[in-house]
Length: 130
Image 1 (cartoon, one colour):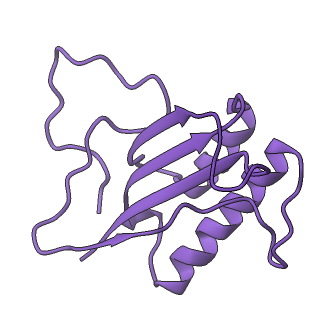
Image 2 (cartoon, one colour):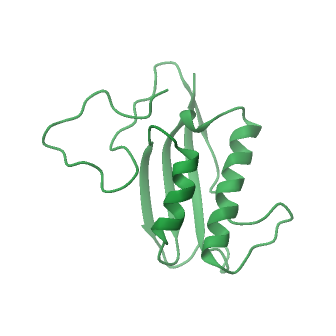
């Protein structure tokens, strides 16, 4: 699935980051939504540094995609919540590894807290399986 809209209005500005303004879900696709993935390692440990949590979060995203026999091509929407400023150069490097071609729709929000006080980032995926 190509994660971009078939239409690109001339009046709309290009996205300000590595995402698509619109993702079109194919008719008849099954919707798969993940819980927010956090920065714990495979033993459940949560590192204190933001970028270490980002690394673990992307690792957890890969694991959950693999467990459901999905790939980045199935991801249609990503929601990112962070409690501190995102190091975009660091996150974009991992983002570009996950999405080597087309980008999904994305929302980013800075919030005061996540479910546990030590959590610094959480990423939720919306996927379509066809």
